[in-house]
Amino acid sequence: MSSTESTTYDGFTAEERAAMKEHAQDQKKAARRSSRADKAAQEQQDVLEKIAEMQDSDRLLAERVHAIITTSAPALAPKLWYGMPAYALNGKIVCHFQSAAKFKTRYATLGFSDQAKLDDGTTWAVGFALTEVTAEAEARISALVRQAVS
Image 1 (tube, helix red, strand yellow):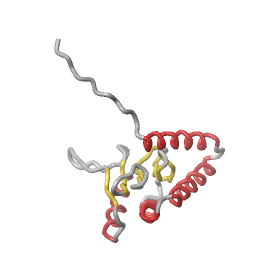
Image 2 (cartoon, one colour):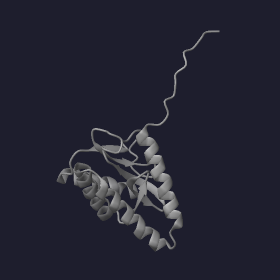
Image 3 (cartoon, helix red, strand yellow):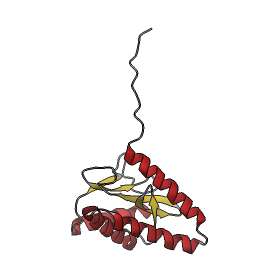
Image 4 (cartoon, one colour):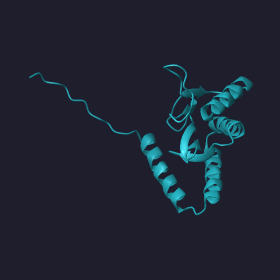
């Protein structure tokens, strides 16, 4: 028999563990809320608070993305998902905003889940880097979000 080198698994990063803890706390908070309207209002408030906590450059991007998504696809409900602003349709996450600082990356991203109807042939993008929300970027985000829920 040949010998194989074993690799060690270092586990989740500190940022990933923190995101999982945030997700568990979000789920507990949501379970304690009473009416559906109360839940929706509180989830919207939670998203706005999370955006307000972000560093300046991420916060400005997140505020614009939030405004674009809520205007372009009012059927999407804001909620926190692993500590990130996310937008759900019928309780399922369609897209989310990930700040650059959250996982110490070079740029913020707008990501789409498999619930998003972005299918285009056999391959299509589900994550988009954001460095600035220009008029062109705003139009693209708006079109993507509308397509995602169509």
